[in-house]
Image (cartoon, rainbow, N blue to C red):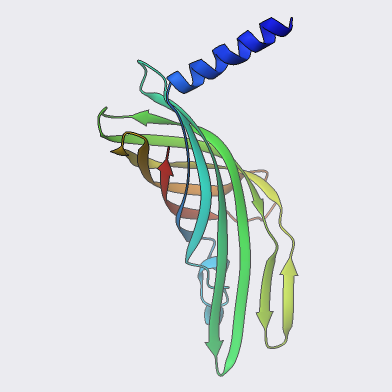
Length: 195
């Protein structure tokens, strides 16, 4: 039995690595699109999130013959804003942790390979903290299922390294919304260094 387990692990490892398993780290911009309460300035009744940042990790498993590549990813979106109104400072902070999986459909093979992408993600919203002159207001986060759809390209930089860049439209709370909960969406531009 022990020999069988060792043989199975060796075979599984050789299949994964011979098929082109890639892993990398990266980051980019998260451009919040909605709802209005997140994107409008404090002076307009919102909390002013716009072009925010994220960091993350990505794994890809290239399969032979078919142009479909399974992926897995983790992104941590960091959101903050600050505005001064009549000498008073207003600030807001929040975050979203996205863990998901999906597929990329390669359009052309080669050193520069464009693709279309579709992902499903579990999104954990961190607490939102809003500091105003009259006090600090905090809301707790929830977890929701969302989707990402977009396009990207993978570029072979060196034999051991690839650069992967993508632009996706993300809906963070497509499934599991409560009654009256507005859709949280963003354009997510990501660049990863894969090895």
